[in-house]
Image 1 (cartoon, rainbow, N blue to C red):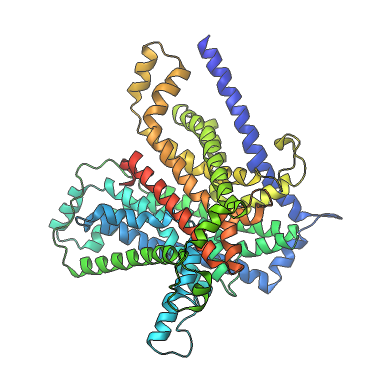
Image 2: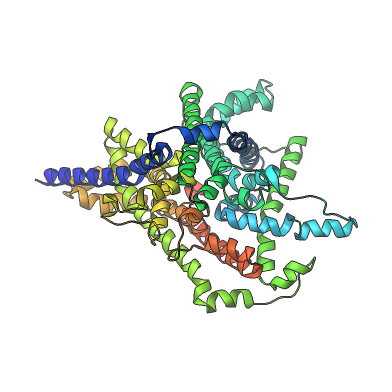
Length: 557
């Protein structure tokens, strides 16, 4: 009887998942496709012809691909080098250095861009300092264009490569490295023949995430891109001008670019990737740390840490300075608490922060409710159905943020059965829904990792003592995988708290998030309030980082 009830509950859960996947992932994409190809006279590819036969539009597509490729190359190079250094060369400050190197993933991209503008922009502290020190008539450099965008993306996105490769290196068999060294193999050959095959899966998964993140980047191209136009900025512009057919076509192209790269990487992974195996000998840091390679690596790490700390120091410092001093003085020094008092004393100014906290928390709760039971079923019940279920839930991984947002706009700007007869656009809940959709792949992956590390004997022991499936799941399985669940939830909270791309497309009067307020207050020359917003978000994110390190040391430390 219990088995029948469990079976019924499972099928009801599958039905609910199907409703969500079809209604909020698949159908919205078809709405976008229909918006792009449907005209008053019927089906037409005219909008795509306008794009491909317009040199300016094709340049935008090419710029987007170039941005994604360069992001992968720079982030991959920095991330892998840092992971190698931390594994083989790091000394007694290893834990502190590791935490600092993970810091950029705690800081929302829009805050990073704003802090970089304050440092390296035309009126930035470092820019003006160099100009003043060397008595230059003009600023020494312009922090705009492709170079500036890549600089920001590399700063924020290298963490994917660093963390994934750092974890993968734990599975390298050090005895194999020692054997290769004793036979006279160079470190280049050791990396190519011993280390690279083990870290390949981690590198390839990082390539997919970084490329998708690079081509969907909006805050950097929008604020410091100058004349370098990419699809993400053009999508927002098309939507703002109410050219939804053009925005939809651009979204489809962005999705296809991301999907093609993902399929190519997956093909390469299946053909050449070698899965990592349990190591037999732990890696021992090298004793000779004064070699040329070690010194160069140490310098690179020190530069990276300096680049990480400078924006944080700058944004904290300037948040206590009057806006007039920021705008006029080379070294702003008119200190005040007014920026923070304005935020916490004026309800209208505080509202965006509260909105973001609420919407991020809602996305975490909804994402965990969806993915925790589903992850368990995928791990426990193998088969084609569950493989298909996982693939569908992982689809948002291939969808840049602007794709998800435009899909939702096209699907829910009118009443929909999937919203129970409501139109969601313009209301509060559309942004938490968007956050939830994009969080599903990361939460699913995090939960699966936790479940795969679970001792299966615990479940069997619970059943042998007469406990039902529901009791075993809630009282045995969930408590034992709680660190993985919570760390994944905290990561999503951090990622969505300062999210900018989807917010720029979906926000309205009732759900204005802090990322939008940061940009608008900066554009309104209320720089101090914008920076104070940033410090508050950074503080929240660092508290969240401490929580992650506390509850899930095995994966992150």
